[in-house]
Image 1 (cartoon, rainbow, N blue to C red):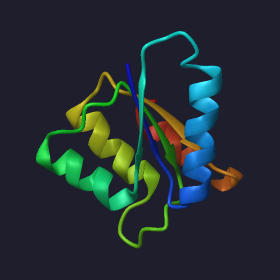
Image 2 (cartoon, helix red, strand yellow; image 1 turned 180 degrees about the vertical axis):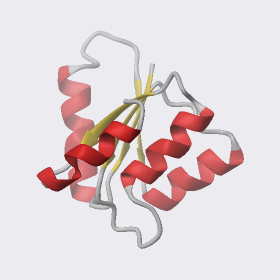
Image 3 (cartoon, rainbow, N blue to C red; image 1 turned 90 degrees about the horizontal axis):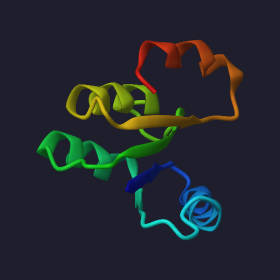
Length: 101
């Protein structure tokens, strides 16, 4: 299983990866990778994105796309990928219902 983490805050990404490895991957074979938003966009555009689960921050430090926009692109390419959103802001809650997650 391949799990991707995308957050504009690298410290938060590292904390999330460590949490996943300690609490989810224990005894399971899984590969956890960290993306910065631009890398994730390039992998999706190039057709090489291959995560089974994607954990993505809704509000990325990316002027062009939000995490929700990127999730829509993931849905188009990999509809079997499960999306998990992260956010500290409740105002994004209704926007995520427009994507498969």
